[in-house]
Image (cartoon, rainbow over all chains, first blue to last red; front, side, top):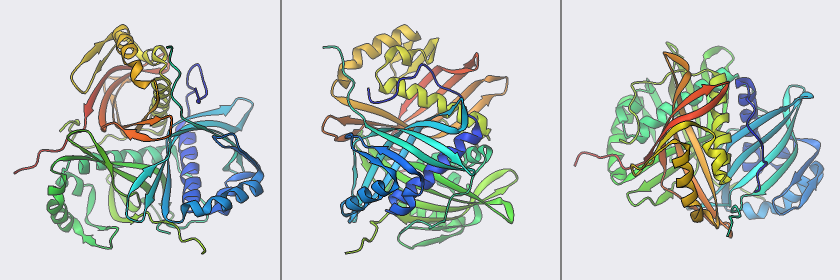
Length: 151
Length: 151
Length: 151
């Protein structure tokens, strides 16, 4: 399974839930606007992204280079990232460190209005709160794959 | 870009987040049930909708007429509006005025169960709280379009 | 109409909203992981599911048998359930009983990454809180169907 296995869920306060959802609403507006500098700024300086294929980007500079190289893919499409089913856990040792996992669906709408979908993903983030704002420290992206069933 | 440009995001309380999400859950049930009177009643009397093509509906009566005319389009489909990534800001001068933006995905399911998608949209609303309930005062609908990249 | 008709919406606290969303985030991870025992454990022992076609499963044992029989359908697909527009009401007589309705969209991603969609659904749940955790007591699944319009 691509998703983290947990025994049960931790309860989360209404304040924290709204804070995290608002952070992602902001972060996804940046990436979907192809505002790659604005998106990189939602990560800590030495933030890390582990892509579904295993490729790792270390630090904002590597992230920016990777996103710049990928920009031509979005020349004629409007991309939107949709999130759902957030599970949020605060680090027991540090309330400014959060572990969050969520479902992600990505739409690509072309100029004629046709909508295509990327494969679905499950994402695991570590967020840190600095000066009252959240930033992503690590992001691990898992492409959703079929569960292996007994033969 | 079709979406509002902001410098950063405003934090929102858990109470407000839940209130706004519940309002939209209710409002979308009305429109998806083709309960056009019930939907219009979720707007203030002089509410305004600016559609993606630029067409403007002023006041509930114009909204009702427009929706009535559009009803035949939904004769054999079940339409559902899906929202995500809400950004909510309270007017600093009036806590009963909210500015909300969100992503919107629209599914159309036919009688055989086939699902089609409208182009994705980003919506900007001004909501007002009256007697403890939210109403939409203005809605501006932006169709998501590709970002213009340097040649 | 397949969805419950209500006169208006009840306000919900930020705490309750986050609690319910977190419960579903957990429950859907279980079903999407095909962890049928883990999923059944999110229902009360005598929980009941009324499927869209009218078929009823009474109690965890019947649910488990039904899910076991359905497993081969998911041999080569990754299924994900997406929820939106929750309406949450607390039973006035018992704050540990909740009535929740929500939209549900189901994606099926195959090994090549192609995404297919099941028809959309609206679900009505009765949840109960026991020992601080939520469980589903009854689930009624409605397939979304076109609204009948006057000829």
